[in-house]
Amino acid sequence: MQAPVRPEDIDTATQVPVLNLNGITKTFPGVRALSEVSLALYPGQVTALVGENGAGKSTIVKVLTGIYQPDGGVLELDGKPTSFATAQEATRAGITAIHQETVLFDELTVAENIFIGHTPRTRWGLIDWPEIEMRARDILARIGADLDPRAPLRNLGIASKHLVAIARALSVDARVVIMDEPTAALSHKEIEELYELVERLKSEGRAILFISHKFDEIFRIADRYTVFRDGEHVGSGLISDVTEDALVRMMVGRSVDQIFPARDKTPGKKVLEVDSLSHPTEFDDISFTLRKGEILGFYGLVGSGRSEVMQAIFGITSPSRGTVQIDGRRVTLRSPADAVANGIVYVPEDRGKQGAVIGLPIFQNVTLASLNQTSRNGFTRLAQEFDLAREYTERLDLRAASLDQDVGNLSGGNQQKVVIAKWLATKPRVIILDEPTKGIDIGSKAAVHAFMAELAAQGLAVIMVSSEIPEVLGMSDRVMVMREGLLAAELSGADLTPETLVRYAADIKGAA
Image (cartoon, rainbow, N blue to C red; front, side, top):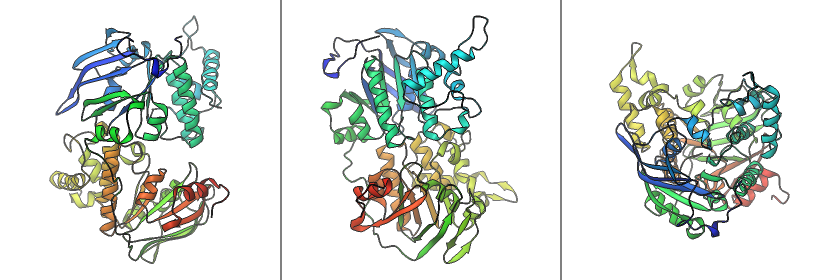
């Protein structure tokens, strides 16, 4: 085990990185994803990889983990050239990744998920169940996860599943740990625990690649940074030597002084009225109104019930009581089809499972909810599908090689744009955006925010569910704060501050 390494003690001219990439190039049909990029990962240090969606971050991770093989360049492990023909070779070399949307198996236990693919065996070649359970307990205890190794994964919440994904990554003797948006599904307390885990990994001499769009995380946890832009390396160095604005300029090639667009905050007539909406287990007595041209924010901590309310309004779940009215007319929403027919659409938080259809091309994803516009006599018309998809993807500035491209090959931010385009093509009256910029970069965030402002200016009524306080403050006309399934406050104007949001959401005494 290597001794802890302090950033100030690093001399990059003499110390050999654990993993070093030089001149890495990767090309796909019609797209050059990486162009002679460099990346160095040092023992006992966190290197933040920063860049907009489409900058090449996901591609370099797949090169590091053996999923992709580069077309050019050199990869060195402990100063010696190497290559990983498969993901298994990368794992054997001590490289492991914790992805934002790691695939886990609900029907298996926690322990089985941790050791899938490298299950301990007895000397007779049989699965060693006692060994699996014992080692799983040790790993879970090490990362501070109070989970039963024998519990079925389907019984766990999102945050607990994320801890299982971390445990799985650490179940191999990792020398390099890649963390791709590791805090996306975690609460504030769980994020603090993750930071403690990172410090432990650093003290053990492991090299960590940390990918995040949250600058507060980067400046808190990283020792070094590397910036990619459009598949190229544009800068790297010590985090202590760079400012947030300098990183943004490197990322986007410009200074982003005003993230949130200026808007005329004069809403029109009432479009949506929700009265006393309740669910047996998720929320109770939710009432609010939404006006034409308004952006209504919903804020709350993890588990506050925000998404559950939106899913009920969209007809995914059935409330136990309460009413929903559109333009003063009471509507019954038994299914998403009912909601869409009444002009309500919902862009979910989990775009991978509930939003985009991975495996279908972009144009079919966009037109999926608008087949009545692109078909005749039961047959779809390809030209009309492309025209409709092109109209809305161009409005959202989608970055893709072509509309034939599989949506699964897009960056997270561009997948989000496809999902938004799909629902906008239905020409709704009300659009619900659940964490619309989760996991996407600052440039894509600005594009989504600008488009939200444009939608409101055109008279669309917008509900935005967000966990990011700057986004809530910068985009909302009013904010409904939820806590434990209840509405804790409605805030606007001078009352809408970071302090009041947090106080009401966390039930901190002194909330006025």
